[in-house]
Length: 311
Image (tube, rainbow, N blue to C red):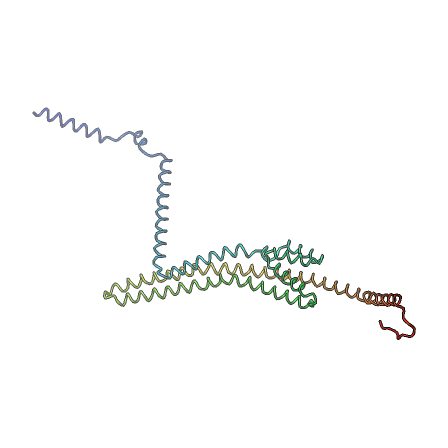
């Protein structure tokens, strides 16, 4: 009896000793990951952490915007309008929309040729501020040929001032958005604070008042932060467009002055030609009258007993 039990015990001890013995170094190195595998594992873990952080950020930002309350809707509308205005002004407030070298060359050539009707048609096809000034000036000059050049110049100056004021008025909408957005955010903050204090006043538990006040204030300040986020970029872009408009207005004034100076030269030349032709025209009129009288006398000879006829 004892011999089989002892044999079984010895076998068990031998098995435990075999499993407990340390493995050789080659076996341990085979089980350990290589350097490339470690790098890939670390890269995968970093990507998973970044993805989780990005998802957490998106969710938290969405939650913050939801906590802003009803005033976040007008703020969203203002942000949409601001983006549209910035894109629109970037595309429209440019050099070729105000004055271009090609238009000035064509206008100068037509004015020197005195092709005023052709220049008016060219101005109607051109969508530039200086073209509108030129078109109004030439339209008045051609419709009123007896008008003095002083009146033509005053009309050109008035139209130039109108075009400059239109460009300045267009960008004022962006300034309005930049001014209104923080005020709307402040209104949302005030409404949120009123709501928070009403909830605090209706609460009976003393410890809940501080918790409700902190949560209400954080939610109310979201609208102010949103208004500032919209208003600050809007005012920055307004300053940029304002400087650009001031530059283009000065170029429009210079181009309009150049057009008016060319017209003044044409007016002076026409006046000089009229003064040169006036004496010749009067002499030709006297000669034509004497010729008509001699022809009349030849055709109808005067009776010596009749009274002399007049011219």
